[in-house]
Amino acid sequence: IQIELAEEDDKLIFENEHQLGTKPKEIDVLIVKKDSSYAVKKNLGRIFRKYNIIEYKSPEDYLSIDDYYKVCGYAYFYKTDTVKVDIIKTEDITITFVCKNYPRKLMKHLKQNRMFNITKQEDGIYYINGDTFPVHMILTSELTEKDNFWLRNLTNDIREKATVEELFAEYDKHKDEKLYMSVMDIIVRANIEKMEEVKGMCEALLELMKDELDASRSEGMQQGIQQGVQQGIKSLIEACKSLGASFEVIENMLIEKFSITESEAEEYMQLYW
Image (cartoon, rainbow, N blue to C red):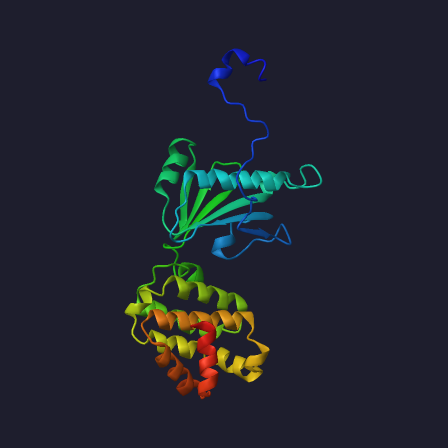
């Protein structure tokens, strides 16, 4: 081809084996139905087919035009990255984008340039019709807490005291489950500054983690603390510190609330301060 275009090579750039990207291509989440015929009942998964690709954008990021095409590229690559030819059918793949705010530039592009039809199914859920794969977009800021409580609150913009209190109450029902512990840890870390407006937050965090602290203490400090509990306590200390509580104040609160010795409290503080 370079020979054929030799007369114009001063106007062209030739790159052999051009590398795409600087890191391995990864899908954020892949959900595969065990039974292709099963219809997912939850609103987030009603569009699902056999293979379902999820792309999650952090609350501080936005869904761009290039993001859309990148994930479509991942879907095509996933379809072809198999031992047997056409073992994964294009009609068995869906794409889901999860982001905080409505991507106006992307939606305008898809409507005007691609002539796609975009429909709002319910609060926070939009279907994009017209591409090779069924595509739907989840806007976490528009989801209702009634239907999608945890995804709705996976944000860095929690402001209401009532929302924080409800998060603690819901988490308290599932605090022994690692998935909930992980999500709660992320939410607390993302909203530490916002939570300064909520009075008694430090007390609430200590109360929330009481069982985990007791459990870890009973097993003995020398045996170490399980990873999930460790993350929870670390988040608690960081949150209280961010809220302005001093080392001594938090240490004294641990001693008072959980009836532990001063040396035990100091060990916790040294670990997570």
